[in-house]
View: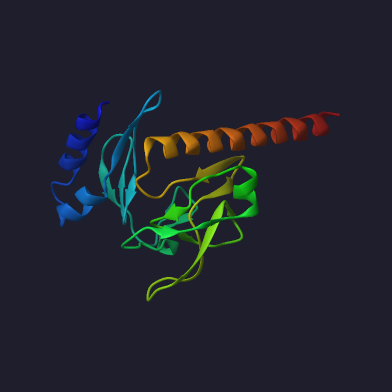
Length: 177
């Protein structure tokens, strides 16, 4: 789909949502050469899915079966984050965040920050990897990135997928042999 078509679908989904202006200001779309149209799919506690439907997510929802959105800190501005050892080894370049997640041992953080706000206090991570069942979930960008930042995120995702594939094959070989 082209950018205008995605924007129209999003605005159509806002028919019964107020205040519309908040969501319109947060919905950022980028066209990335070779990859198509990219956009943020969660805004506050609403999800814009691949079918272009906008649906409410309860703060008590474990989104995707594990992602507790009540642990997300929704900030009014972007903040700086620092790379972790894992983020540095992967050469992950992002140094900013808009909606970091409370640090938890179930996540392998790629970057981290300390927050002390009325609603968010402690260590928070912007980008991370989490084992989910037999696979992994990778969260890399939580703000409106540039096309180059999207390409960098895709390359990090590819690196992680490569490592995971190698480990899976190695474990499979060990189990057989």
